[in-house]
Length: 435
Image 1: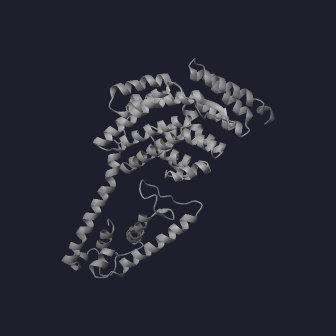
Image 2: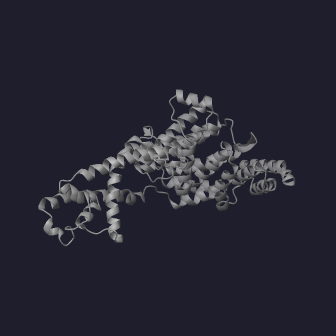
Image 3: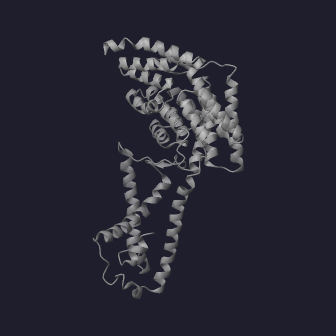
């Protein structure tokens, strides 16, 4: 609609010129050809090894091949665009010339009043479409409001200095008590302490697998409740992508914790809620990349369930997932996210190791975290575990020794990691002599 009126005025073949002259054949032929080619495209795309995936927050359950059914309506106008763009580009390159009798200098005398009138709606629609396309880009810049203190605290947290990070997070919470962000950051710091204390070797893999109930659990759960309550009070007044993201993060933090307690029903409920709010966030702002963290984790883990767990999920009508889609979404979050960039990368690395047994890819995903936060002992432990599984005994031992040295403090977390890293280094030290 932007170029066809220009083609018409240049004296090039155009749909506007055809319709104004009563010739409709070419226009409808292109619509039909676009429809047919679209079905062929999607048929071939579905069976291809490397293919397009169409993902957006709605109509994912009504796909024909890989394309949501409504998307097929885009192929007819796409074919029309091909002709319009071809003639304009060919004119620029000198491949096409104006048709005889329709040169630009002759057009004013040859165009009747009704032709000019017919072009005005097309021109108006063109500007409306252009404004609609540009508006989301202009509005996106202020979608997420994260104070500098919060960013500094996150850097400290991922550097392994959770107590220093908590001090900054308390400042954020005190300065903005009616904003869920401060509570999210505090819960995030508490979670990393919990994860650290729960790490163990189980199934020959270092991770936080389970954790017994303790009196301090309720403090963490109260924090997640506060996040959800405050975010939903904002949503009730005026829905926004930012608050939907925070609501999703509250449920996500809760799901992690309940997973450590083997509370399967609670984990499932929290995961479904985190997914729903992440989808709503992307519906309001498709460029809010952090929301893909929750979606990616849900899709990946829902597909990684055991057959019995999948059957129970189906009977309970809990949405399913896809590992491939989950990996793609986590990659978006770790490359384009803001608040959850590190989280997305860490959990993708762990999932690739734990469920896909793809230790090389897990190392590749994890390495940027070690480069950015070289003093985080947890990252070094996961690295050493991957190296050990790849048979690189000497490198694994070095990584475990590095984690042991980094855990030099006197907190419960430091003492636990120091012992775990020392045991792992001793266990894998023999591998260096055989490889």
